[in-house]
Amino acid sequence: MAHWPTHKKDCRLALAKKVKDAKREHGRDNEAVAQARVTAGNAHEDQGRYREAEQCYLEARRIYLEIYGEGDPASAQVSASLGVLYTLMGRYDEALAMQLDSLDIFRSSIGERSEHVGMTLKSIGSTLYDQGKYEEALARLEEAQSILTQTSGAEHLYIAFVLTNKGNCLYGLGRLDEARAMHQEALRIERNAHGDDSIDVASSLNNLGAILFETGMLSEARANYEEALGVYRRVHGEKHPSVAGAFSNIANVLHKQGQLDEALEMLKKALKIQRRTLGKDHKNVAERLDNIGLILSDQGKHDEALEMFDKALSILTRALGIDNRQNARVHYHIAFAKHKSGDMAGALASAREAVRIFTKHGATDATSQAAVDLLRKLEGEA
Image (cartoon, rainbow, N blue to C red):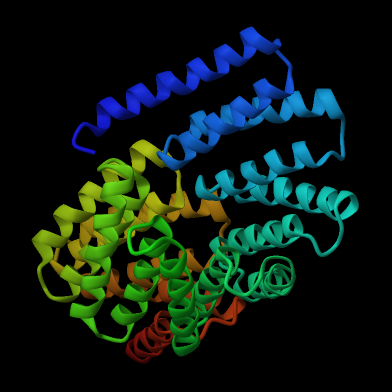
């Protein structure tokens, strides 16, 4: 991957040529053209070119609908792909609309307990997780696991995907031991299927790293993150959202270890990649801004930190709505920064908003408890 920018350009040209060749051979609205569009969309998505992937999928879906009409599994499969893509892009309402449409078609055309239904339920669970709806997501994922175990077997990669999503939900609910068990089982299945050098393995390494980080095992967490970063670089090159995510994870460890300048530099690299590949209004961009704000706050740069938090809050509100759990987390960070800067009234208002949202979601994790503790402290000082 030493010449990744050139490779990406050549790959883009090659994908466009395949679509053009299919049109020349089969005509504009032929199934072969639609399939070429799907193949191109998959490749663009894998390489982080989400907007180009969207255009390919939309064109493929249009062709399938014109050929087969509503209710055909071919168009449903493209809708499912769009649902996954929109989740990656932070467009959750559109993602769920596509996924639910696919689910209805698969259930009516293929059957209630088919592989397609199981995988679509898995995708819906993933989207709900990204919206912070952990309990609702777990219910969908349990149903997906039951179906996929029956259709594909307990050792299939599909089961690893479901376990990963369940682990993420359990992590979000603060059930760390259960989450760790899920991710370890997913990693075992993935290593058996792929060996050590696959993006699925890298994803599970990141997930386990997050749990190790949460429990204070920083060296072990960083080792997992570094291994995952190496895989992402070999598979995707340097300018991919997964690489940015790995940078961010390592930066969190550096931050915790007090290496603030190094952590800040790594987060800025991650932010640049994510803005370019995901767009400036993606929730992952907001997360990086929030991370940067935390470091600036720890450096005593409270005004700069609050600017980062406000930007993060605006993006998250547009992407997820005003009462999402990630907003609660940012409100807590704002309250903490305002408290340290002497703005007691502002800190109290932000802490109350954080606790209100956490309470609405029934959150019991470390961050929600820290917000409750801060609010009690501030009310005692008022």
